[in-house]
Image (cartoon, rainbow, N blue to C red):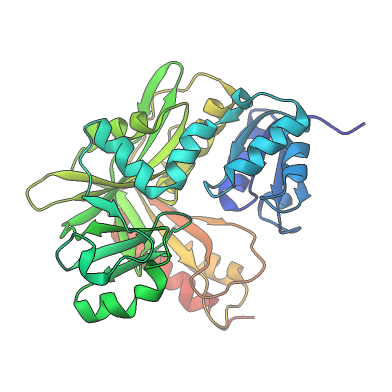
Length: 371
């Protein structure tokens, strides 16, 4: 007979890995599904190899687990509902709900949910299939976004003149895209919010520094965006853990960009801030357990992205840890292709931003070309 598990994960990347590690510290057993037989999650817990759009594989997770959650928001809802029918289980075993996931998967539906809740967002509109470049209803510059599947800048185009718009028309004119007003924001903010039966919990507001549309590092903000972040999470509908990405304008206004219904890159600092981590919070809400108020100290998180000619990451780890407060988190991915998120480091305490960036420079200098 197949072993049963407390919590299943659809997706087996680093977010599932770190959530599973948090669950294991609580004595919970976990099972993940991922196309990669050697996924980061499979290295720390039992796993199933299979496609995330395969209802039969999803049904196996559903049958063998008491509760199920998502590592990412791109699992097809139709496949999940078919798997539920096949396994004869109820949707209530999922966190976040399938309705919430469905809303998040379509960036335009997200926008509409925020607008109904009175949350400020950039103005956006769908691009009809076959639309002419002159008829999108926005003054240039504008931002074009794929309504489905985009992340880390994928599926996003900033259009500054008519020539760029016409050149991109083969991409956006076939449907599935939306146009959004260009927002000249001061900086990007991010905040983790937890919605559960006992109420709402919010982690601190962080500044999220982006390089080439990918999070580079985060650190505590001198602005409190909690009210906006909580309103956005509640507009999507709980329960769940939500990473809320926001724009801070020069006049202090805060606009919501988009949301992720799962642990988020900008919340990795919580592994070393002294309070509950986003990963333990994720597990708790998925299992229907109480959640403590998030409290901790200042931490800067810096991402470690793949590079050409990468050597042994342990050389980088040793160099970064010349500052003994540096904590390196490595995801166990087999190929360090350029731009791939391979790990991150956290530095708590005073001057955490400068120390984190210095530690990362030492990491890359020792990692590059090393044996």
